[in-house]
Image (cartoon, rainbow, N blue to C red; front, side):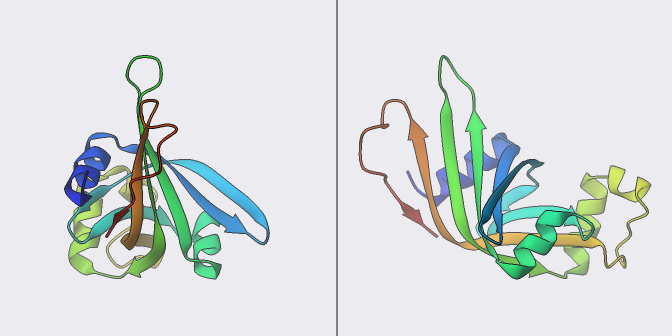
Length: 140
């Protein structure tokens, strides 16, 4: 497995669970993943969300993507330090691909439209078949 396998898996399985921390308490929530490419794993949120504030205080995060198949399925965990992005072209792209954001009054110039990515970190796949084997870490 390599980073291209991770990119393909995340782009095909858009529901993920993103873990952050708040003080000493872990926090996890389901999230609609945006996209991945060779430059990172991209997410979008709003500045009103608590997990945005959590990431500002501690930018370390982990996302878990899951594909159900048979009894168990496959998980991919992607962990790293998030980077916030203020890029006009990406904001145009997210508003085009997620038109519901406009219903919340978000525009390209809205400070509440938040884009972030995990560009560097590590990932690994999990299946029942590799459950007891050492993790094969993919660094990116």
